[in-house]
Length: 271
Image 1 (spheres, rainbow, N blue to C red):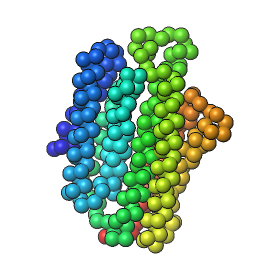
Image 2: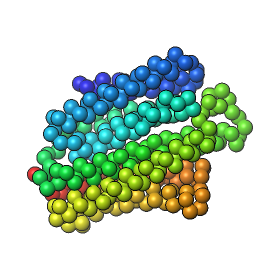
Image 3: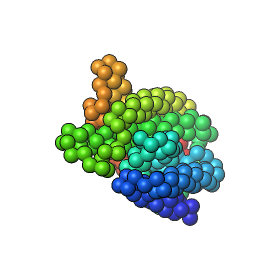
């Protein structure tokens, strides 16, 4: 299966970047970068084939949403791995991406049904916008973890060869700012599209209240981070901590809502 090839590529690329983190060998990073491009290409082909099979954008189930989120986050990291200062971030991202892909691999190909004609456009646009925002949140989370690790090592004064090659704090802070700002815009657009989707189906908002609450919590974390950045000039550690906490809230909300209310986002969607 194509998904198996994708998983193998992600796993091998993980090993490659982790190896580069500890060895700083140029040949290793060249191979790891090539593998990463192979990951993204194979993942894109898999997602396109899934879309062709289902005859709609594959975002209509939680596993498919996770698949798309990992793919979009990988695309963002594609730009980061080519810069010397940020290449090692892939060593932290790829193991997480591989773990989530392994979890959803058995069920990502299941088609929950067909889109109702009135939601054929608004729902995919809504979901894709939200997932794009969440993908930026994934990148921000990985960046935040690396920021906190690097800052802690600096404060302890125990910098060694491996930690010394982590991206500078100023670079990590800039990536955080860009990801949170971009994610906030994408999530906001997604919420607007979601309102249009619900309106097109004349859904009672009580039926999708759990999903609305989860979306609002995610949006609030983005909004709070961006507000504090501009209004109070919060930078660095504070933003990183907020992002880590917010990411945990997003994951708990995503899992909890889909377990407790599996059809909360599907009422009126499936024919």
